[in-house]
Length: 123
Image (tube, rainbow, N blue to C red; front, top):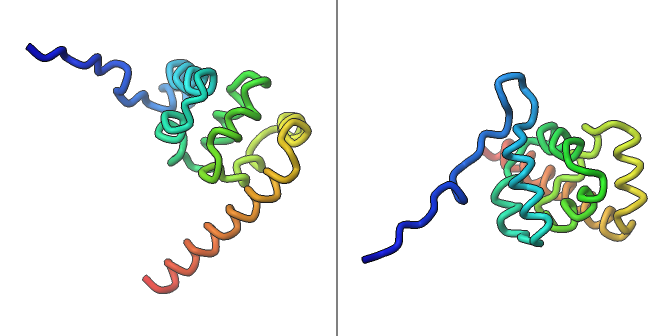
């Protein structure tokens, strides 16, 4: 007989609660992915978030997890999300993340934006 997979581990967790805050359960899953260095799981959770939602998520994370969040997101991280966070949070992150990673991320974000704009023009 086959074992039934525990679906609670893979079930989608809504991002926001009824008050519009980031759900604690979502933050817990993101935290667990960061702590276990599960880049694929983290990207599955947060890779499709809008930049403002990503900013809210970053602010909801413990400060020591934020640089790891960005690193594990890799090329999927949209650095424009940093424009959505409090100035102090942004400064703390920029102090922790290597400048080469920031430069590369900004370049990739600009390329993605240009590609999306081109796709809209040709659609």
